[in-house]
Image (tube, rainbow, N blue to C red; front, side, top):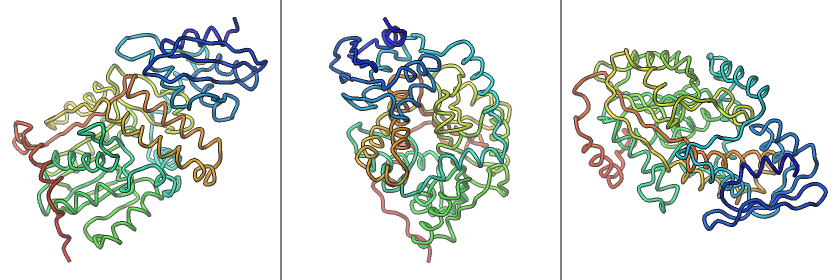
Length: 416
């Protein structure tokens, strides 16, 4: 049996995988599973097999990107689910790893990647978020929310789930008219514009992406609210002033553990004495870990999804009240499924905009990310903090009441 076959025999715990070697030999692993599609893959050369064996973390994704690992039956989504579906996080099975040398090199890289200085943060953000907004429009919802949606029903549309996410966050922020809100990592401006429309608050959104900044400012101008909803290209560490509310959605993953303390200390300083903050971030349900090598290299350089313990260590001692913690488990898997299906439907447009390896990279990324939430140890945390003991109600009833009003109520008219 070839070494790659032994490797795959350990990897396939559920489902049926057929492998076609460069010489035409076919080997079948596992058996069909009603919850997982049968998949057939083909290697174009022996070197591709060796690359995966020596460095699984980078090899599989890069061989797929290069067209040296082909999928003859099924899609990359099906392949990733087949491999991950038999290694669920809660079962505690060991994940497949590379050799000792590869792990040692990765350990050093992980430590170095976590130090996100202001200059390095801007470079890392540009790598991912300065892709064309037209590209993101191909698979995101109409409001360009590039973060976990909130599915009150798994069958809801992506647009409905993202609108419900915005209402869910707004309800937790307890915003009153006239308040000043800071949106750290504002993306293309959707949440900032929503918060102003629904509450009348003045919002400052900050980002390190020039592409996102241009789109966000154009949206505010088009809505006639550019005087009330402003966007700036600035690092959170350089923001000045005081804000009644702070919200950060999908940005904390780029802060890095060495900077967690500085992040929370800065947020505390920016909040008014009775200020409230809502942090929405991808997180680990287990202990601290590392970012996989392929994602760190090709998708999110400098990115890291924190364990809850790391977040706690970041804010403890700063005398901010942790007033609510919510764990969203499957919501991101459902969100990414929508993104993947839309990306596949837009294949020709994506290839024309970039190229075939980019399309393969992106669909591999979406497939792996979704599997991490469906089978792995990833989740989303929403953490609410307050500087004042009594600013936030002592029960959670207010959240549902406010959400209902936001979903069914009319938008607050913008001042002339």
